[in-house]
Amino acid sequence: MKFAVIVFPGSNCDVDMYHAIKDALGEEVEYVWHSTDNLDQYDGILLPGGFSYGDYLRSGAIARFSNVMAEVVKAAQAGKPVLGVCNGFQILLEAGLLPGAMRRNDGLKFICRNVGLKVKNNQSMFTTGYELGETITIPVAHGEGNYYCDNETLAELKRDNRILFTYDGENPNGSLEQIAGITNEQGNVLGMMPHPERAVDSLLGSKDGLKIFQSIVKNWRESHVITA
Amino acid sequence: MYKVKVYITLRESVLDPQGAAVQQSLHSLTYNEVSDVRVGKYIELTIEDTDRDLDQLVKEMCEKLLANTVIESYRYDVEEVITQ
Image (cartoon, rainbow over all chains, first blue to last red; front, side, top):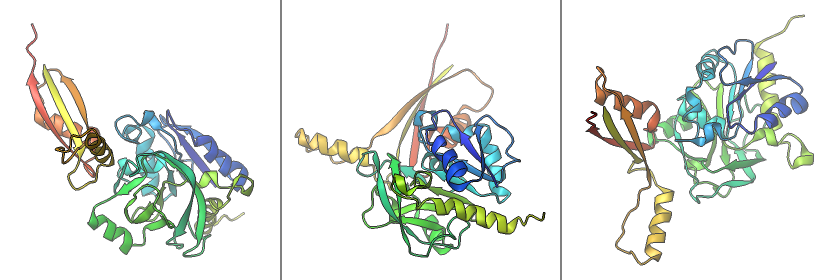
């Protein structure tokens, strides 16, 4: 499986994401600059964290209009897995690929630490490697991770099981219903604030994030049977 | 030429954590009369004379980029600038 890590000016978790795919997961991966206008050769699209365009105006607001985003939309519509982490999540929200918006953390502080996450749905292509209700440890690092959507959207997210991860225990940022990660209606676009790419090696604290990438690959393999 | 002043704040229904912190700080400075603070953004646009509908243009810019209408509301004033 071949992944693209989209790089915007100001991305800073692109190297972690690349490392997670190449070294921990052992799949093909390439950096793709935001001006690219073709993603056809990639099977999975990864939008890394960071501060694209300096977070000017709003997090993700300017990156959302870069060239590559039309291709990300196309990939999403084609059913390819699209994962946005942290700033990548914010970009997916701004682009309308996921519903809702991010507010400042309710404590106004930038938080950078490990958090516990509850797996709320393990039927998604991103989470089949987990047990339902399992608690995993993955770090967060953000100043604007306070997820918000209107009541109607929240009801839809719940009804369709599109909330994959919630913060376990204390709510670190004020996020609505402790939401940490959601998918689109088709289930192939996931946005999450915690950084699974920083949790792929127990020597560095946790490898609980690796299963997200492993789940993507496993499910992709099952639906793209390769005959030799 | 026009000068357009755009004001963006969080919607009434959305809690503003920055505003709440500023309000608390004003209270600690004894300005207890302050009952609400909303922190927002102010954007100035200078727009050349155009055949296109100015109101329509500014609304589009606000909805597409300048404001995120999921959580923010906007308003704007238009001033005509007379150039010599």
